Length: 365
Image (cartoon, rainbow, N blue to C red):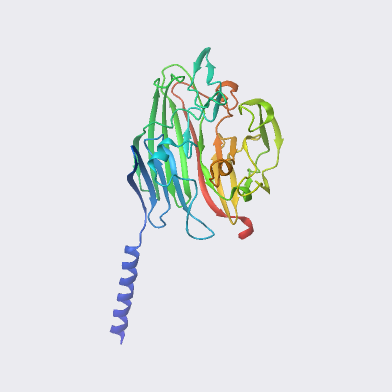
């Protein structure tokens, strides 16, 4: 009887070991492409093998984040956190609404597509002619180089690089940017290192990210971090529609995004925002939250990102039920107004970080 029990114990342990050995663990990085018509979008996909959570980055379109899939803490199922193009390469490559774009060396708008730096006037591409602005930087259509990829240390990480080297109109500076994308059990994280490679001269820089977070926009509650007081950045004509959306230099304190108010409006036409807000107090870290029913979509960022742009028009204008919440490291038109603008000296590296997680809303805990 003792022998039989011993054999059963060994068999049971063997089964446990076999089950543990067959259970998927760790992370991997997949290479692939989407092809539609005459367009091909190449991607790197960071994958948590155990959970199937993933982040997809388009390498030949400026390092755009095309997809973030994380486990929904309410349903325990994978949730597509940001709006995607569903693998349509034509939509990915043309991307008229700038979904997931990395915005640099400037973010959002530059008035009249021109600025003066160190006494010299520069003219940028005027790609928002209706408002007479240059918009969303110069990286968006570039092919990035893979510097490193790794699946150790409890995460998948990818480093992409691009060097601005006087090939873009209006930005004749030698700037190298390393974009690091990371997926771990803590969600999605991103780090930026912007290196002024010039021998003697400074350069202007600021950046942002342009995700559209999937949610029921009219019912969503946006919550700014309570570590700071907040203010609305005033624009010319005091309108988020009938304006060039260029800041006037004035701000108006507001506590509206304190967790007490939904975006409002109707499902088909949520209350329209295309507005910028500024943290009046510098905190080490900030977290902005989109409360979508029982789930909080959390946008974490370091102290460099004191400006936030909110856009809710995607639902009424083209039917996308998603809300753009953009962390900005300087104010819109910072090449001209210098509010938050980073002047990177020769040999200096500007570093910043942000990330996305999902959590249960407090009322469901």
